[in-house]
Image (tube, rainbow, N blue to C red; front, side, top):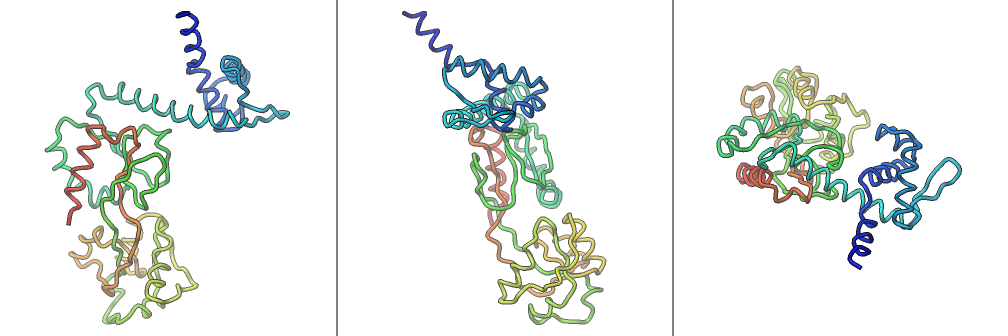
Length: 301
């Protein structure tokens, strides 16, 4: 009886090779693409999935000519297996990269990192010398399940699936330009800026439209110059190429040096902000907890 029970339990724990083949096939809706992802042959993937179906005694895919489609059972199973493999990957990452649990892989926004985080970060290292930080810069969206990260600093809203978000700070953007651009002209109201050449940051495409809308004005039909990076927009403004809508706390140095000047003290009200986002399975990971507490100390006004 005991042997029968063990055999039943084993039947419900398929091999990782079967599960990885099934997971890749489910995500790609293709045995062929799954094979490319896992560097196997299409036949090997098909055999692994077939073996999994036989072992479980359920049909996971419909085979329609040369395509596949998850069955209803397969759809539910795919979600559960994807989460399970994600947990295994994260557990393995912690084991192989950090035997003492003190490594932290952190994704950061380049400008936020260089302008705000790095000048302050020696304090964190001094208070937490046992933690080794590995930084990677990210501008585009990414998936924690496919990248070896413990946490990330994200700008937007705290709605990243499968994570715990900690609000850090808001971003208050203001219209600025070079003294040479402004000249002797005093900007008295928002409407005057509407006729000026505007500089747009690619990652904040709605900054100017939202600001004009906030001040009961329509956005100019001629959008103006679009630049990819914060540093490019800043330098374009310093060179006198137009007016930029930039986060106040990230251009303190340029304002103090007189390279940029505030045109009008009417900031952009933004519901988005900076958040520390962490996969739920790492929310209590000691280095993440230490970083979270330190960041909150830095951002308390």
